[in-house]
Image 1 (cartoon, rainbow, N blue to C red):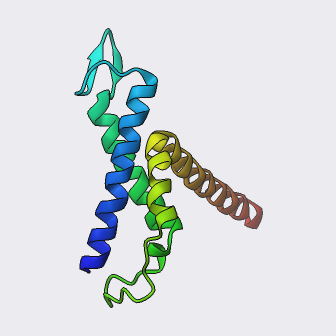
Image 2: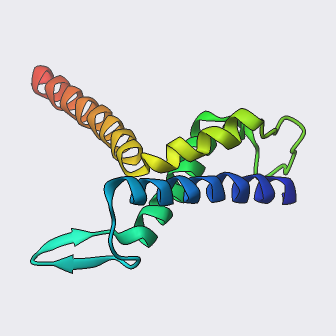
Length: 125
């Protein structure tokens, strides 16, 4: 489990760096999240947190960590390549967009499945 924790922290830290870079690119002026005239700004801290979470989620879903069995605690097939570490930075830079895209795809799939079930029920009647 310690290997999984270490790899997760490395990926999240690189995503944190990506979030900080994103803040510099978009010109964030404050460190903490704030609301000015009804407009929410995540601040540098918020961008960094979203970047860390996005990098961890993408690595956990699309990397080889997706096949890690937490209950068996078998880290034999788990690895963290230099590519995965380096790619955590651009994932962190576009973290908000990536997480929203993943959520929208899952939401669209659920909506289609629900719609199909409703149509099937209507057809049965």
